[in-house]
Amino acid sequence: MQQAASRPLMRKPKRNRTEFWMLLPSIVVLAAISIFPFFFMVYASFMDYSLDMDRPRFAGFGNWADTLTDTAFWQSWGRTLVYAGGGLLAQLVLGCAIALLLYHIPRFRNLFSTLFMLPLFVAPIVTGLLWRFLLDPTYGLYHWVLNTFGLDIQVLGDPSYAMFAVIMMDVWEWTPLITIIVLAGLQTVPEEPLEAADVDGANSWQKIRYILLPMVRRMIVVALLVRSMDILRYVDTIVITTEGGPADATKTIGYYLMQVAFRFQDIGGAASVGLTMLLASILMGRFFIKVLRSEEA
Amino acid sequence: MQHRQKLLHAVLYALMTLSLLWALVPILHMILSSMKTQVNMFEMPPRLFFTPTFDVYEEMFFGRGDFPQFLRNSLVVSVVTTALCLLLGVMGGFGLARGNFRWEKDVSFWVISTRMAPIPAVILPLYLIFSKLNLIGTTTGLVLAYTTFNLPFALWMMSTFFKDVPADLEEAAMIDGCSKFRAFWRVVVPAAAPGIVATAVLCLMFSWNDYLFASIFTGRGTQTVPIAASLLVSQSGIKWGQAMATGTVIIMPMLICGLLVRKYMVRGLSMGAVK
Image (tube, rainbow over all chains, first blue to last red; front, side, top):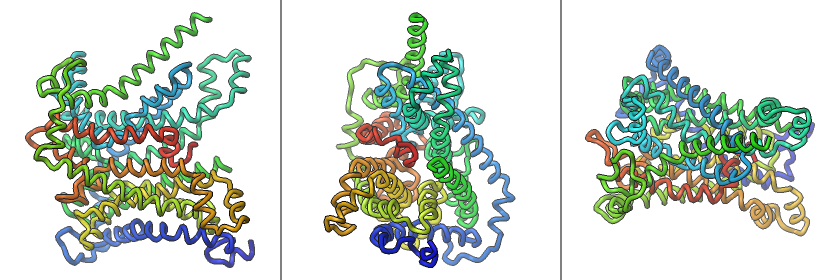
């Protein structure tokens, strides 16, 4: 180890030289398309920069001050919290419930879980378009269903329901992700503690509460982390259904960023918004790695 | 007791049916609507039995529109990106799995945060760089953009698959006189083949399904199918028949691919955390 510390790149130089050269091309490409753009964005956040401008001017902390004092920025983050929080909570509860359901049914488990995971493969843009069709006030199937129950609402056109609707779309598409991850965990739970619980006269609910759920805790955390990073990644469904509206009701931070950059053409400002988003996802990524490492050890 | 068990199962199956309806009705409604006439399509309650018509599809594929070109663009971009990321990712993933480098932790962390970076925050700097390099509106630009999330994904996934291949395997081959690279190619790669296929399918799916990158980085002639879907939405209304048919064309290949690698889906979607 003493000797290794003095080598700058590798711990066991002789054994690992080939591996190093095999990894290098990926590192170089990834650096070019991720690290370089990142620093470019940091640079842009300190410049007065717009799309039609040839030479950006230095702006100091101007963009940052503008962004951080803009109520629209904080409101967008607030909506993102509602969108992510509401969506994740619903997915978590439904996802675990359906995983437990699949775990407990004696037959057709594979068939049902396969059918249930189909929404995962639908492109988010198609999810948006499809749900827009389902909720359409004139032609929509789900609008018709709501109508027969006496609820005549234009779900996507009403500021008080639009957020709920875009959350439902995310829940529809991604609940299966939580379900299949948790189900995979449940299927590895050993028989013995369950049999022991049977002997002690525990009922199904007690077995779920005190044996099954604690044993799949790691899976649940993993699923939640993957989902929370992804919920920040995509804005496709919002772009195609509500365009952030009505009355900004569904303008999440990602949509806000796209608007500042490509509609208002304020690149410097958008760069500072983008960096706050990156910061959030990096913090979650850190946490993800930590969870993986801690459970491995 | 017997009786209660039966009742419980009946409740479970009823709840399961409800969950399946919730998941599948939208997809079925889309596919069925795409095969209905304009009149039948908007009937409520929807008609389950009808004479299917493929007029919309015929118009899309053989009409005057650009749909075949959109489809071709999608295919080219997805396949090229997947091939590129897999080539780099398979080699690099092995390096990451076996390398034992000093900064391995930092590389892993960097790889995963690149994969998970919010798309709007990635688009912005790439847009500036691509416009300087005249890559906006080109297939190359879009391939590079997709590489930003598919390369880290391939690297990460392949490293988890290679970690499952015992190191004894390549060491045995090396004792027999293979170089490390040859041992990797001849012994390790075949052992990890299912993982490679699964990773490839997921890379293909992530590229095929993307809308946001394509909406910024493509122009006339390089637009992909998700763009074709979004173009059907306009101020004057939405062409629902075409929209549902386009949606069906977008999801069908992915449903088939997804089901083919179903066994590895959990692993891929949990970034290798769940095996």
